[in-house]
Image (cartoon, rainbow, N blue to C red; front, side):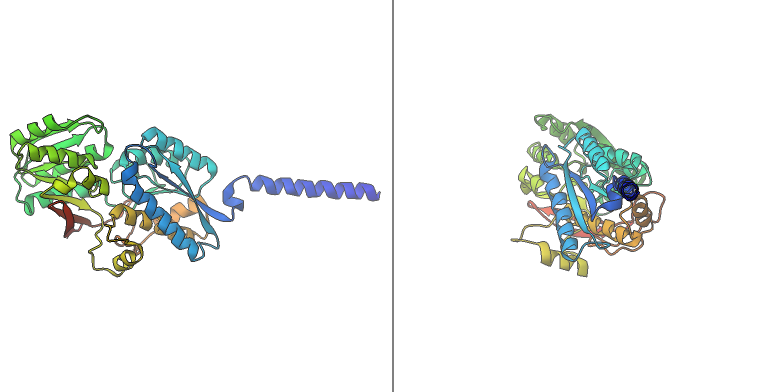
Length: 380
């Protein structure tokens, strides 16, 4: 009888253990950390420009963990390399969802972020991108957020600046047809430039991996526009060098894809005059900017907005986890959507529309003799 009782007790104990293990299959139930995935390019063509986003995420996670983490847990950062491709981004996102992360930060380039967002939405994992501005990203679903402005606003801001500040009447567009970012921003700029009375006198296309841009520059120079709009990344600097060789009189104008170290390494230092949009400047006279610059500026190296936006994205996400009181994906998503007046380094963030887009200022930078400096702020 005693032996039977022991056997029954052992059976009940085993059953309890099995039930507990069943609940603990999903990391969200039993993890002693809050898992966040970071998806950026560590290798490939966009790796150099993505370094700043990767760095910003790491800085924020380290800072938060040094202060004790969030909801009594440390943040566990799981980094994935998207290998600079949309398919690599999709695969990385699928791995993150399968691992059971509470949220995803990334990516940098819009083409990569679109691939990640589709997977995140399907898996109901909240995602925040720091720099991707393509309008279609947040339209994918209610789990997708960004902390930058979108291309509709960026295109409008740059078109207005070209017309009102540069007194441009004509413009030529140079668009990378392999880039969702470049295509979307070109479309927005064209719409608003023409709406304000400007004329697009040429729309030339290229691909990121083509050997040279000499013929492209020659065609643009032949039209002799007031501005040439190049919504690309570091290849834009190579194109501008060719425009200068072709004696093109146009003022180069770009989006937030400019401004990285690689942009200047590939020819930006030779630009006598140019302008581009950004999200932040270390010259801004705000307490948050001063604190960030003091903590992270090293050896007089320029701090880039991608790094600061990534830093802000992690803190925004952590704030949502704190308000949710949980690492549960749905609760974090709901908290993100209710964000109002979150104090970020790059400006206050509120999500008040159906889409996960905040209202953010555009910061215009002027390039003079290969060096960028703060020019002005354009508000929504």
